[in-house]
Length: 414
Image (tube, rainbow, N blue to C red; front, side, top):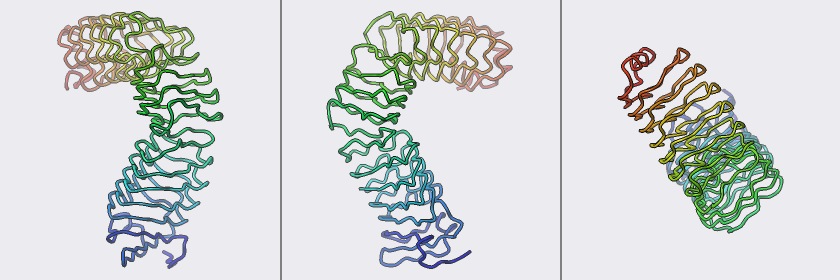
């Protein structure tokens, strides 16, 4: 090991109320000196990243200057450093990992250099004292919830390609700047005073829970440029009075809008939670253009008795029909290969279901609590049945139970 003394290349400086004795320092430092609340750590020349949980729960740590030998700040690197007030990130750093500075309650400002190209999910989540952050245009990969619950931020945060955060109370109407391609997950979550949003036609993707809980949102301009709307993007937007969709994606259906509804032709994706808890919905017609039914799309639609899934559908996601207590029968098309977790969990009136011989896996809890289910054929194509997939399906014939148990010994176990 080459000891360079105070050479900036591998000298980590910090201020803390006590000496930092943790595993990461012990493994990666040549020396660790501490006096009068000031610390120096001289790193091995080979160290190029602040590793997984390196300083997590160092609750006495106040400031840190990261040496310019570092190119990556890894997952949970400074997680729960609750006294950390400031960080100097050198222009050698390329990646800031998932939840890297999450729960740094005292962090007030941070400057991200132009060298950074990637910021992971929730990197600065729950930093309630953070008042200033600049995300340079060099960052092309920005995760979801990067600034979630950073309630001291007073201005929108975005760069040339991605809209990251909108502070509650900033404006009741807002137009996302032209050129933005993605709206990151949670960016507008719980902005309860937001009434109207205009999305430019440069945007192609709206990520998970982007507008979740925007309970006053009445108007959304959703351009056809958007081809992907992730799960829960408009969940809880109870002030929307008309179905929200564009040429590609169906985003939101207002509770009480109609008891019967035909999703417009051409729609390829229904976003997760789009119809969740629409308790007056009795019948839904799905177009033959649809490819994916998202997470919990129809969960809690307790009056839904009829649905036809077209052959175009290849994916029925997690909890898609969970709690549809009035649903009596369903035909799964030949295009589906897997019945995902809890897809029909709690469908207590479900009597019969047709599983095609294209299906190879029935995931955990898929039919849990379907106590009325009597008519089901498990095709020979099914080679895997998950934990609790048929728990509570007490009305199944003995021969069906036997076949299920032959494939999986845990299908009836909770």
